Length: 516
Length: 112
Image (cartoon, rainbow over all chains, first blue to last red):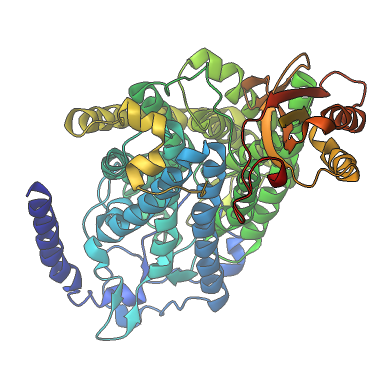
């Protein structure tokens, strides 16, 4: 009876929400011709000298007479690249992360991990298109956006057949906002699914979903807004408007924090949530005494490889254009990862005598995580160094640090994503420096000129990075703790002891992954 | 009738099989098992988690044979399965009360 009532309530809810979603009231005419104020990370723009379109009435905030404004048309190459990048990030999650995590658990829990990843991802994407995108990437205050794009309204005009544009980092260059929103949807999705690794093998399926809704709404969306939301380069028309335009951006964007593809927003954010979860939910039964060896390192390697390939979309796609900075992010993603595989393997070999497959796969992920905030913000040499260090750092994160923390972070989410995310975020401040081969940081968006070597201060930038890291850790930690608490008190976080012993596949999902 | 059970190293299976069919033992049952005697296990390392694995994979062979063949069967298995190193395995001989061929219903020595 209770199940029937819940189903009816859900169905009713969907029926009422549906028409609301379809009510795409005609978008303000200005929308389609102006570069919409969406754009992520405070990454250096392409040599904007070449692109400096006479900054016309492309100011995003409430454009006047659009008739006079030159209509910005998306470049087909940029658009195609961004669609491909979106696909690559989907590939990273399903099947990449799903298999990476799945292979690491015992065979009796394989399907539960695959389910948690796939269903969490799907749910977050749906929520993103309902309200998440709006909260993250529309103008509001410095912490969170507004409801201008609730149910994606205004993102295209179905009556007129026109599509809103989203800004990139180059003046006068836009991509369809739909593509930007879809790209960002995959980021929201993968960030949430990362957390699954920490409480694997003992958490209730419904608890995962309930936690994700809360955390996505109160940690992911605000973090994405604070680090990545800004008005776009075309809003910086003259010196006079700079302060006003800056004030519309997210808090950490205003500080000048550099996070190309999500070291803070994605990795540190998720890692802290995972660690807090591991503490809340407690250790697995038999942890430390019984064997909990990975059941398929073959699949883990397949997952890691898919992650590496897909990450090119994650990092290079964060340039929002198919340009030189995307290429820089691309090659950095290549070099840093390869370097990290080597140093993790070397570290393991020196420490334990053998380099393992799990170590090499984890090394790859460590390098990828560390280069994520740095991808388009550092030079090739800087990327290699970041990669080399992250291999050792990640190895320490899953051994020494793990012992110190004392929590059962089952799949080492904090050890890899937390440690290497923090490392990468801080080193971004170092290697962005032009004196160390980096592209520097943007000095003036009006003229689109980077800071000169004299202007760029490594210590100042690293301090900004550290503040951003600190805010991320605190924000995610507090929101996660509250969210876990709520979930535990309402539906309970953990499955029963018998269910945990028997395996989540059969008890939570009624299936076995491998027939006897 | 006797049931001869031998635990041997897995790679010795083919040799033992040939030795047995060479002396007229037509049927055997093979199972994959794990165990240990004096042979040490190994350590597995997954990131920071170390596991000591005592159990080693072995193969168990069972053959139902006539009393008159027991000594020769034991000799044959011993010879084929021996490497001289720890972990070669053991042979157990059980008394077999009854044997039935399911297809024909034959019992006793005719069923062997």
